[in-house]
Length: 317
Length: 284
Image 1 (cartoon, each protein chain N blue to C red):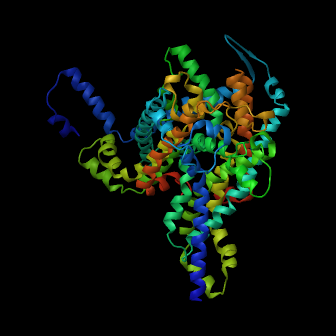
Image 2: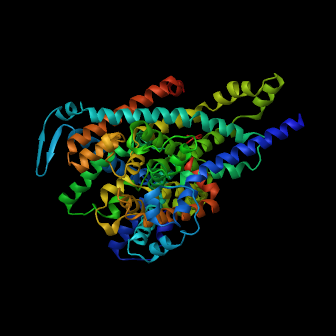
Image 3: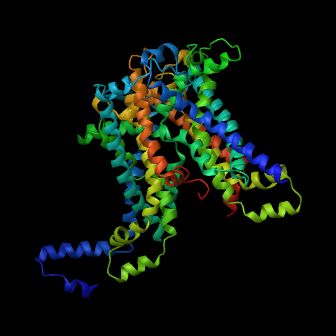
């Protein structure tokens, strides 16, 4: 290093000193990793840890312009609100049904698509993926219009074929729920299919071969090899589906053109948070809602990971 | 046996063809609708009827010549996405490299923080984050509300890309780092001149993941942006979806125009889309 320094052109004394400092800094291997992770550390402290901390504090406060007062657990007591329970119920049902649809169906399709007998595999894979490219705003617009209440809307035309009279899909709780599920299925099927397809590539061919020698049929193969081997992918898909389902907001926002569904049939937890915090400017109450959502998501996922044995396995490692 | 295999093969293709058609149906419906008068959509709903006598390019003509601000939203989203992707990729690769190539005190703790960020739904941070931006304005006089900086700044070093880049760069040969040091390259020179260029293949997938999230982002921009002139494409389109249907021509033709560029990109760079949008699974 000293050799290198001496070859540097002569500079003013102060400049040389600063240069030297910069040089020592940029060649310091002990310091470097901390410099590399600094962008994350700043983001983490300022835009993650501090906000979480401040939202916990706010949840015990009543926040008015120029005046903040601590009100203890009042915000949490106010959560005992039938409308909030309605929102929680919607997200829970939505999460449950999307799991029941968007795990087995894409898994089965992935197995079929992965079959040796399948032709033009990549073409179908890409085509089924296309809905995931649309933003929720565009997808929501399309489905809102498809599920329109006029007799001429696509879904009403479709049920009309079976002699059903036009339905006001987005005005009723059950039918609007079905519309939300349809939208989710349409947008996420291709993505989950991709996850399962990727998982299938990791199954060693020897497993299939030895199963064939043992005379296993397709059903045995599915039950004894494919489903167990896809477990890590399945657990991952379940985990992200729970996050997505419990925090679902934009879908409902678009379906019901804004945050105002008739009789709150489409209200979600985040929608309720948005209404209270940003529309009614009650930041303290909004914080309490957000923290309840955080707890629900964490609890549901810990239970799910526990049932699936993922946590235990990691501990053993 | 051979006959049976052929039959299964045909059945599979039929099944997936039908499925593909069902999946494309909604997109086809909105595409058709973009050629129909918007009043008709509002009156009858979105369907697959083809009536050539009323179909025209009027909606598109209105979109391209009208003053609805559509192209401003489009441009805003484009700008936002390009800046976000550039900053996030460089910053996240920088951080990911630090985690991949060095052993240092507290490494596990800090990486645990990365995982923690991935485990908390973004929707919960939004309220306190908004309060923080307001606080920054009150305390330091820096305006972040109603600016693109406010949208981008909290999400420059993102957890998911950091995680991904760490995985990818762990697989790069460490010898290059040593060689760089011997040749008198600084630690950061090694990253910018040697290792980052080597990791470029992984940038495409992450660029698409970050870009899609930015292009389609809704909730956070909805809260940060106030001025009509600064609306992003999703915000602008959402603002048109009123119960009165007065802007359906822009809404529908505009929705089609919002899908088309992504579709073109997808067809050209399929592999990277699929890599990017399924990153985190399987290997994680």
